[in-house]
Length: 221
Image 1 (cartoon, rainbow, N blue to C red):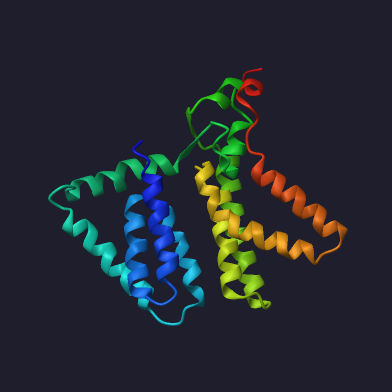
Image 2: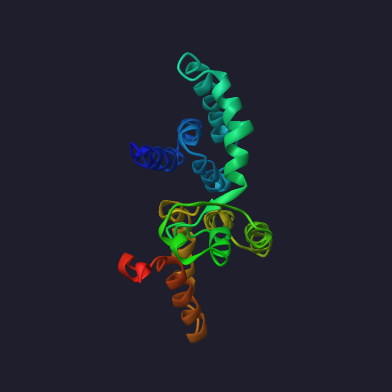
């Protein structure tokens, strides 16, 4: 509620800038972002083009140092509580609000009453929603691996994984979909060199990505 997302974004951008010539510092900055929210960790795939372990070492050192330095403020019991209670509860369900555009949430909303679309009501995963998220995540990662083996650049396969993580997330909020934008832009560039069918597919895909939620008045109606 204190707009921590601005800090997460700043750290993620700092990671990208430092990755060019200071990989150890880049990894450390990424670890700081991870301790604020989990999502920055997936940006690690963008380091695939870098040879060496500098970024990995920086992330490990800072990742261990942060909780140790902050132990007087955040005791170890809080981390245990999060791992044992909070994380399993989060992983077992989703939120029905239409601002949540992850695939599992979309599938789960099909069986919810209409008024659930306007609330942030929690809903435990049904079988269909759970499997939909898993299939998209595993299938997308496999597809990126196949594309890499067929000649894609490693960073291109990496941004595909970022997009898959955003789409398959149980809590695909609007800011989460920032992770999908590099791959979306790459698809548009490919569409420019494609025929009419390829361009139509690109337009429909971008519409599905960007047109997430009707106006509030329409939702109430």
